[in-house]
Length: 372
Image (cartoon, rainbow, N blue to C red; front, side, top):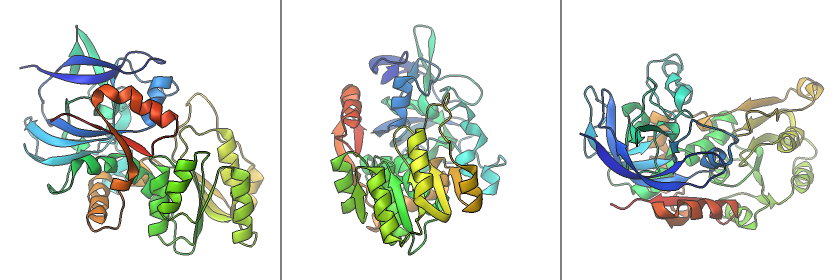
């Protein structure tokens, strides 16, 4: 039997999301049918709209989601109907080389997340004889979706799914950038570039790790003010001003970590971050960039003589099956802020309004609430 679902789709770059009715396949071997409760409006989907991270079109948007399992296919052992889950935008099979060595964020199943297909190249959304992909194999901008059991993490039933949704992408990607990829320790000085849905959680991670100074750089006043409320010690609109302050705070030694979580990474922010760290400093790039452009241009002599490190991080170098639950337990105990991250909620029909608010600097995180 074929189901139908309302979804927000992109048909080509440069066009807004269109709300359409799609046919949806029932779950096959190892798959589940999820009814989404909420979907986060992450900047990564704007890369699809703008065409600088081109997927296979047409595609159902959305990769940050939470919901309830409605049905399961043969062989599903991780969840059952009625379970509350948060989706991981990186599936994790548990058995590939990367999962088995504790690097679930690099799971081989993630190879098709921009293609929008299942790992075998097939699709679950259709309309008029055409296959529609699903962003990160999820397509959370749909009322329902058929996805892999390896893309969901069961969470405690008492947690609000409209808040827990953020732990599917933005929270672990930012928090882990500080804690795991950056290795922030007590007494460190950290500079964070970009205070959106990821950067604000890098602030949370740095604060929880005991950083002495957390210096943020963002041109939007709302984001700077929010960062201070979340524990940042200093906030600047300009990278040069931030660098001057870091030099003063550290007696000229420089920052220990510089974390790049801007919406679109460019050469300038990478150079600023590399310059602001001192000897033995670490630069972590978590934000996305146009894959056709070379955006890391720094002095090799600086890296060698000052033993600096530049590294990338996917999903904050976290392990979805463990860290999604861990972060929600921290939230449940009052040690992690989620409610305060959500600036505005929207209906699915308002998806383009939500992204315009993001472009205009009005949101830390917008969330779509599906009608249930």
